[in-house]
Image 1 (cartoon, rainbow, N blue to C red):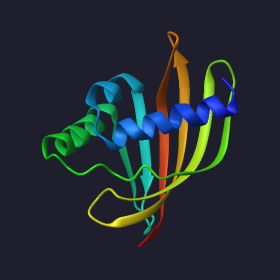
Image 2: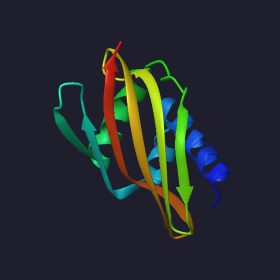
Image 3: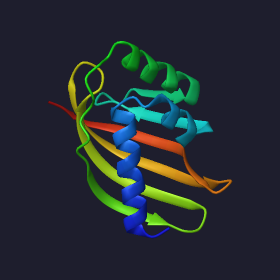
Length: 126
């Protein structure tokens, strides 16, 4: 996969996540997913796939408004089986506007790309 394709894949991922497309999310997130989130105070939380799907399902069930799809891409690199994307997003995910720095690790498993690791750093609460 080239850099442009990786960014397009990530934009598709963001679109489906921000609109709570549960079938897509269940398929794109690897069963070995781990998300590490560091907030503005330095507190670290981790989330697994079942926990994340539960969160998105609640947003879906509550008919929550879609999240922002805006993203600034800083870096994207891939080979045949692994890919890394670094991006910035600003959105209200937990009841407050946050400027966040994401790193996504994609892995090609059985001819499909899956998010296997993700880190999120809250840079600023707006």
